Amino acid sequence: MPIEIRRFGVGHRRPDGPSGSDGVESRVIESRASGSVTELAFGRRARLAPHASPRWVCFLVIEGGGWTGVGDERCRVAAGEAAVWPPDVLHAAWTDGTPMRAIVVELAEDPRQLSAVVDGAVGTELAERPVSRGEGRLADRPRRRSAADLGEGEPD
Image 1 (cartoon, rainbow, N blue to C red):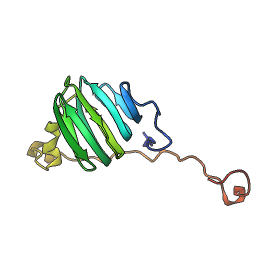
Image 2: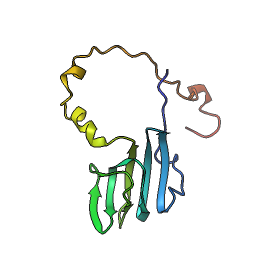
Image 3: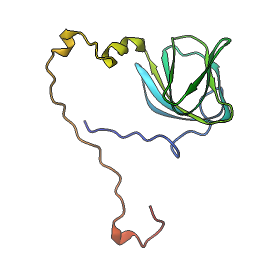
C-alpha cells in the first residue's frame, strides 16, 4: 500500500471551522472509529465554544498560543504544549490577541497509556519481538510542468 499524503495548512482548511466556533478554520486530516486528527487555526480573538467528545482529546499547540478551559478553570497554552481532556468533559479553547494553530488528536483509548512507549518503558516481551520489514512506496506526486512549459500560463 503506498503512502498517502494528506495536505493541511493554509489553502486546505474549511473557513467555517467546527460547529460552535468563531474565527477558527479547520482541516480533518484523518477520521475513523478509533480516532481522528484535525488541524485547527485560530485567528486573533477566535473561540471554540465549550463542547465534549466521547473520546480522549489531545490538543497539541504547534504555533502561537491561547487558552483552554474546563468549567471555571483556565490555562494558558503555547507552542510545544498540549492539553489532554478525558471523554465527555466540557472543554473550550480560545485566543486573545495572537493566533494559534493546534493539532487535535481524538483517541478511543486513554493516551496516557501510550507514555510508556514514548518514554522507552516498553515491556521486554514487546521489545524482544522481531521486527519485519514493511513493504510500500511513496504515492505519486502531481506532475510538475517541465522547463519547456514554463512560458505557458501562470508560474507554479
